[in-house]
Image 1: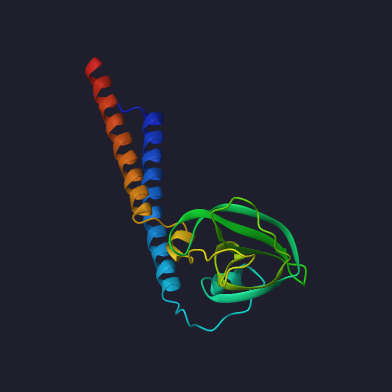
Image 2: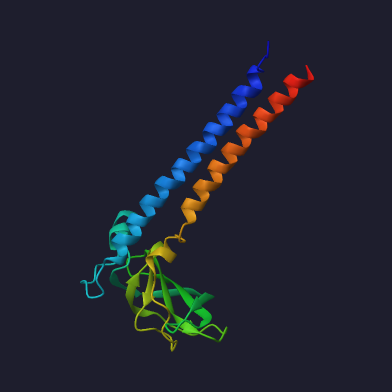
Length: 192
């Protein structure tokens, strides 16, 4: 009679079930993110501007709409890799601001090929609101050139097929784990 070891079998079944659950979760995330991207992409360029959001729930509703704030005090300005409106690689400058009411906000001021940090004393910022409550300034500020406008898919971390690939990866791991365990069981039974 062939005996199946109880503890290793339970561990393998739990691991395979977990991997399958992770694959299903990735498929659900794919559908959820595609819905978000479609919703944000459908926002018309001439939609009316919204007030700068006061909280995370307001940010969720205002994403990828025109908004503005007044940068009462500039904290730091730093360069991050970015693209110009024409698609050229270079630097986009991010200013950390304090608003008149004491809240913090960030402004992507504009694009440059030059790594030197631009000077900017603050003031009104208007443009498209993106993730993390950042406004992509339009028109650009601090003497910088126009930067690429935000893409909802890119800003939300959605790559074409990314979640589908992760799901397939988890399903392959589950299949491989089950197959390896069955091969190990078969080998054990033959040795006996």
